[in-house]
Length: 322
Image 1 (tube, rainbow, N blue to C red):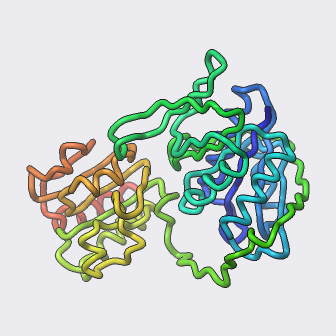
Image 2: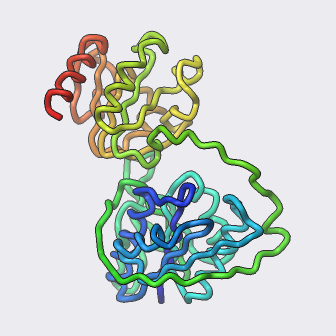
């Protein structure tokens, strides 16, 4: 029984979530007493691939098919499934990113595997079982599930495990997969990325604001605070619906679900749909003029005050302590 970890990249570079899922798979391999292989697909330099060895990837498979120039769910699922079969891997790990939400279930079907979504800890292997821990009820509880099939596909929630160095020598091996016509039914012609911003799913810190900011012209102080903290910016649904901020920044149950180490909510009352999408955050800080705002009930730290008074003072405090 071996483990295969599929590692995403962005334009040939790995992000923190990639190193986190390799760290998780490495810890799982040690717990199971087995080997770990990593698979990366696409145009990536060897120097970048070898970074995976710093986190426990003993064997690094590199697939770069000429017929697939960008991410294609069906094609990538076929490549990962074929690699898992080739490596005799009974467990396949992925980071629970936007792309993996469509990719992982396809891999599970191709392998006839049990599927565990959004795992937050190493599995319990006692009594020969494979029991995973995931969040449930929009992050309000934990669910413990046994994966009973021999083969398993699991996705790891970002920021749930952390990054741990476990240096190995690392051996890069070219991997060639056989792709059928059905694998290439949809081709991505171009991907345009906003490269000057921190990705919300990968962010360790997020500064978010709502209608309490009164208008888009007041977001400069939110962006300044985020820049000082090395954080991503986000917003509530009414803000994105009003066109104050792009929909790509909308976090919540109907937007992007996140689990950063720090989530700062400014002028957001805390509707249940918003809280559901951010409740997995390690630390939640709420700034609101209404002491009865629902968000204070789930906050680790709360400030009752006007954002236009509090945020400039917080910015100055951060600057003074840099």
